[in-house]
Image 1 (cartoon, rainbow, N blue to C red):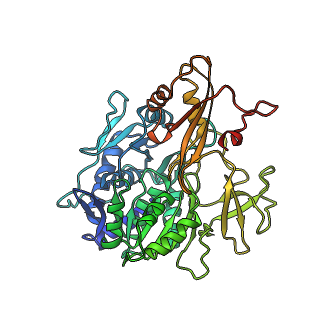
Image 2: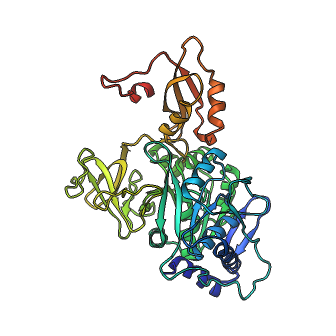
Image 3: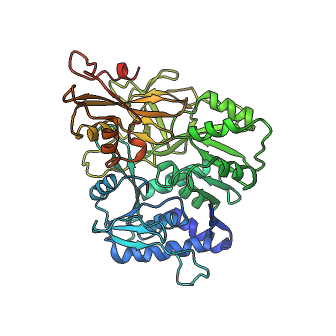
Length: 491
């Protein structure tokens, strides 16, 4: 069945053709109206349908530009799967992702094409923003069967080994677009600051899906620049600001209590817990109340804590969205039939219409009795509002980007001279950590240098995964059963 998301885009193109859908914030200052965006989507869909098999995957490795949105929506329009990947990943990571996902084609945009020659991928050029619209370039479900509504793939940091590739189908896409629009009360009059990379679950949902569904304009930013963000909030007409804790922390330090964001009606944070110190600083220095949203690549955006509600608890991630069921359970039994009572900490398990259909290459379902276990510890109050209290999983937050330490350890273990290694976080603020590698050399008299280890890692990992701190030790602390005691290392 065709996606409601694409029907909404067609409606906007027909009734609000000349209204802006996307503005790029930067030197060029390009923009696209809804009619122009729909034309780009339809044109790219035709290209996808002509070369990609009905169940095929299109790699979309583009920055926050109009072409990224057009390529993803165009892939959905053709009924294929759009695989959104951060353009800053290393060649090594990208090649592994392409091979695992069995991508058939890659979306490229003029001026931002990544060098991927020799990878056996067809190159599909996303069209430029058209000056004039051709009547034939209308959304018409090009190359799609009645049963195929397209899908979304995202890289997830995972919990063990290599990062996983999450697959979310068409109904999941529609559900998260509808739920997010409803929860944040998006309307065509809103202007959303697109600060989060569109390749992330949070970014695609709040920078493409919900704004397209609601028919509002997105102001796309290329990375985080404090001057640009402050200018957009003060003079750009931004009404909705989806951010991450590190961004709010940086902005809070720049305010003095006199600044005004005249149009901003809703600011919220996701990616990791927002510290109370940052909440207080944003309120004191900018007069901005910041809410929280909770989700993941596997389940999408599933809760929202509206900062404008009179009973707003800034430490809560809020109530579940429509159709979402959240329970806390004993993490040792994971029995969803016996959820814990309100106020008792347990592992958070989620059942949602937006959650994944599976991981690429894994035949076993990642769900237990229909629930996805998040690896987060949480408490629910009597209303069902959720407060995240900790993590079971090992993921390290390095400023809205997640790092799986086991992935980094696997890479470092291949470096000549490394006997054992463990990777732990080094907190540098309430919201940001850095990566620390603790190495036991094969030969204690001739250990590899820190620069050798970092150079080896840089060739195989994204920059944010490369350890900033490298320590050489004689041995790692271990339990009687041989398990590495990570907490002792991190303390």
